[in-house]
Length: 119
Image (cartoon, rainbow, N blue to C red; front, side, top):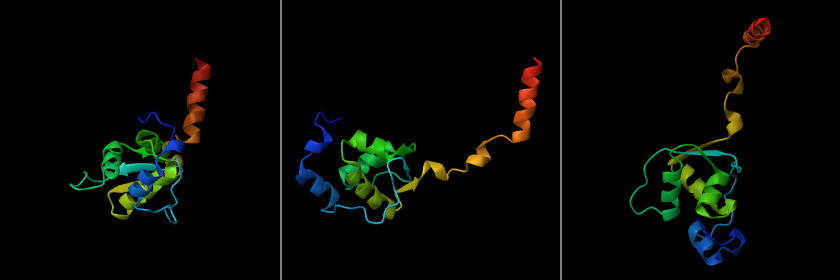
């Protein structure tokens, strides 16, 4: 972890990391979007891409990746778009998970509550 605050990041380094891009385009990613690695790093890949692929073997939020790399979220989004475009990672918003499928049926919950009240 870098001991320097993010706002003091060397602009030349950020320019190099992003290939001179300042925007991730029409990205629908936000800070809580979960990123998951789909393949192992390839030889000759940019070091930040390699770090992201190693970090995201388990789902990791964009903001966590940013903190771990010590890079601004805007820069991390550009790097993630590169990886998304090549199919090396997938992204999903936590709210896109089918919440209803994970909740027990309302009637079952009522029965459990009634059972607990009888104890």
